Length: 96
Image: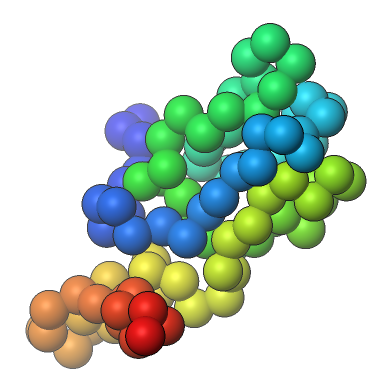
């Protein structure tokens, strides 16, 4: 089965490696394998696979992960497909 991808370069996912304690919880709960543990620290291996569900951030005991979960870009893509319009997650709305 091919790895799922969303819109390129739009994920709000951030990892603070300084705070990471290497517990591996993010890798365990991520449904798309966005994280791996290398050298006792988490690493983002595929940011574009992130569907912004927020499971990683909610389960990180060190609060080393942030992501704007909720509607996310996946919903924007689906709405675009259903309406026959250009997919958009309105990522630019918060950048002002």
